[in-house]
Image (cartoon, rainbow, N blue to C red; front, side, top):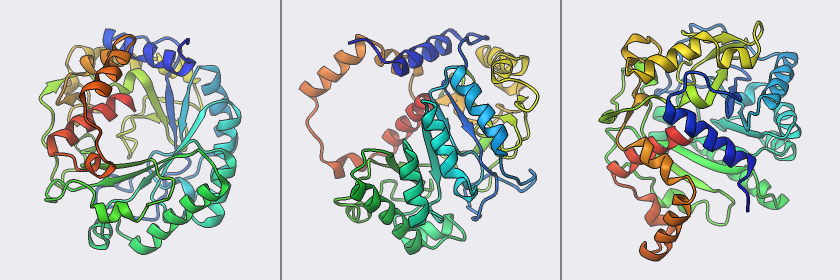
Length: 357
């Protein structure tokens, strides 16, 4: 069977990433569109410092941006960056607009505002992916990180969303519950008692991670040791992020300090292969991340493994060989066993997620 357009797009991205192409034809694979940078929480692991003007994306700008994205071959649109996307009153409309134009619509939320009404609207709009940032498997840890949120209330919001998804008999959205585990926390896995509460509910993934260093801007919490191997960050070869006011930024630049373009004045294609993007690709290719204030202190250019080997393992025929080898040689693990990762396994998984994003 022929590879899907999505898979072919992945191959194209990996090809230019491995070649370190300064110009990448065909546009990005995915974009972040920020509905708003306003947020109702003050999370201890977030780098936002309040210096960026708060606002909400205009729907005319949004529609033009989505239409350009479709014409450029974009596959996924993530409706989040900084801020809480559910604060935008038209978020369900935004999801539907993306889906109706043939692209995957994704949201990551703190779920404080995931009311029954918004849950139904998002499900009916055809949302493809819902990431829930739920940073703690107990009330004390959760509320220490998610400052301003109530553990029990938000957990009930999540349960209600999953019950409604099940009641409607929907296969999507794919639901991922991401949980930040502080480096100093002796328990890096998610407590099995927390996971057991979701028995019988349509949740697809539990993902424990350590905090990001946000380009070095977040220096008041302990960070996991950076990887040992330098490799260019894949973001500049696969994606771009558009803030609510049209400024194009890096997904780790939540304070908008380094604009790479402006969609109110340029097209996506002009920005994608414009001089700022080409310069960043060129210097990262040369290992000169220290010459880029955007990238100088970011952990995303340091890996524990070898990204080339990971990418090659996902190309045919190696992907099929790998799957067959796993079926024959790796014993089946229980769901709970898969959640209990060692620290080194968690680090390797974080590297892979950065490549696959």
